[in-house]
Length: 90
Image 1 (cartoon, one colour):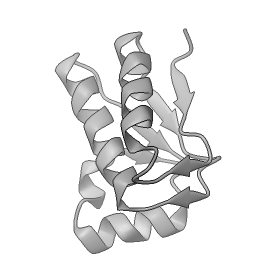
Image 2 (spheres, rainbow, N blue to C red):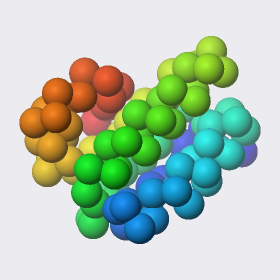
Image 3 (cartoon, one colour):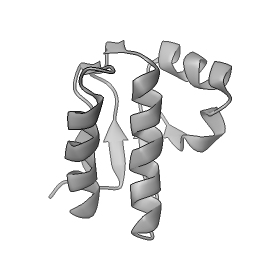
Image 4 (cartoon, rainbow, N blue to C red):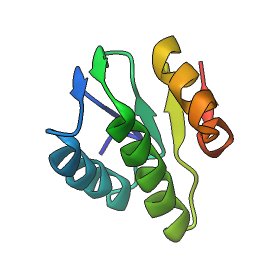
């Protein structure tokens, strides 16, 4: 099990439920970071998934680092006022 898992290229409303479930499985197996490098298509659902993953990690007594958040998604997080909920690292 790797400590890091990746979002994939697409994280939109259409893919959010599947991504959420897959990420929670990774977190349950011990992942402590999610890499958003490949993320090119996203909407506000991506923020909901990232926050839910972090909540799942906290419930396990861990933190989930968000790596390489695309600038446009970081801007969206700021616009919604949820940027402080994301433990973003570069």
